[in-house]
Length: 187
Ligand SMILES: [Fe+2]
Image 1 (cartoon, helix red, strand yellow):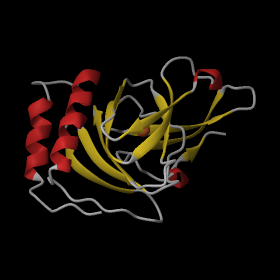
Image 2 (cartoon, rainbow, N blue to C red):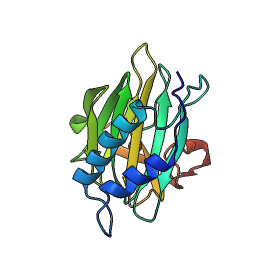
Image 3 (tube, rainbow, N blue to C red):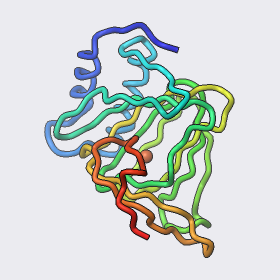
């Protein structure tokens, strides 16, 4: 699906509206931000498309305090378990549904929580958050993501046989959809 194109300037205006005067956005502000942007996007503020080969994504806005991305997910498209470096973040599902496996506390498989994130759901998280997001549904999904401070690095993980979390690669990147193939292996 592609929405009608309207001015990306609206995205920039909404981004600055929810940011405080200075410093990174709080976790609560990030959630408010993506929730508000989801409404703007559903009203046609920016187009999106789907890519059967890999997740389509596009940066909507960036300044020195916040970075905003629009991501689409075909069925079975998903991420690898990852963190967001020193950035906090939030995402809101606009359409469809995503499954999220997350670790907000101890980094072991026993603490991995799987939740369905239906359209309208917003998830906010701090800089230690680790998660994996996958479209397990039969329908395409769309989500808007914000990071503050803007993303600079990601670390990717696997669950080890003993239930612990193993760091498998680290990548300096400002792109939340950067390929793991470009990451520096840590094993
Ligand atoms: Fe993420």
